[in-house]
Image (cartoon, rainbow, N blue to C red; front, side, top):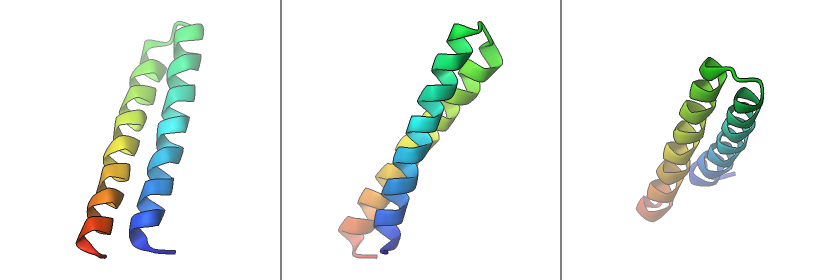
Length: 59
């Protein structure tokens, strides 16, 4: 599997995991979990964009 594809897949997984953490944190009123979920979601978006950049660069 290409590095760019792997980054995109892992990015999507981090986004999904972050969204779940954020939702659960809101449901149980845990502000720390909400913050961690948002951070993981954003990190996933960055990783996915990195995969896009690698694909354009041909790596």
